[in-house]
Length: 392
Image (tube, rainbow, N blue to C red; front, side, top):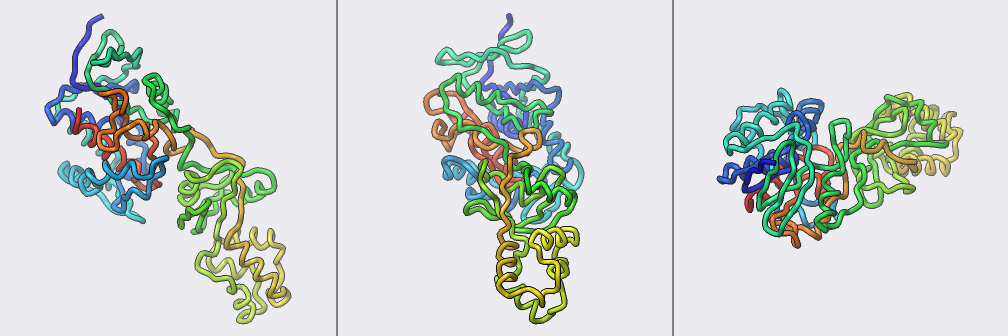
């Protein structure tokens, strides 16, 4: 079988892999970028509703989950959101900021893929699509990768195949299998930024499917104020996706349906409007269907004047920390990213190189670094890809 030699082989033509290959190629390295898919950047194309939330101007290490919360600091500090924005603007891609620092293309996410492919062309990167990866070996000096009809070899190999989230796009746990083969530890992967499901008594809230409201969702010490959406299976929306990354099975989450009130607000409302009801009081800030469901669950459907202050105080407290205990999540099929992954304890934070396997690197979602919703995971992909490319 014929073989070809490269300076580096990058496995995975997603966000991190494209970035890493492009930068390494522009540094004069002969790079092979491999993917089993028939086109590059498939997850990029569907991201952000087709407009790609490509970074977040508030990127900071404390917005990432990892067994080592300090690991992402080096890469994020050396390749920033401003750096990627500079690349976007050099390619003439128009963009806009939405809420909370999220940046999107004015046009299509395909513009970002085209930009990255253009950067790969500048670096003369060889792109091998529709190329299932066979046996991967290492003789101590060079890595070998079996591809359809040929063998590729290089002293450097980059794992950039992501995690198993969104399997319909071809995502698998290949990165973890390969890492384990080389003796790297893997932090147990799990779906993240994913809708949560409800069962039992809480399934009654399914009647609210399609209703959304701004809330504060919390799990442990983590809190997010954004929209929550009731679905036919449970809870979704940005606030829930965010908190799902911190949620653990059998643990509750708390929803504050009245984040702009204090503990005495219902008692004060009773004094000012004794003939109003809890439903009407809640409907001032919440959708009417949700206000009705909450007041019925609290068994407070009469005028506030007929309710003792103690019961109103108890209701206000429950509304500010309504506990749900999800019975699961919608899994990798609906997860935007995968939490966990290749252990940062086995990687250099500066080069993303395996400590005990010289020449082996892991970047992007394959690594145990998971960002918040809103462009943070793309910024980790760009930054980790750039950092690894500096030593290829």
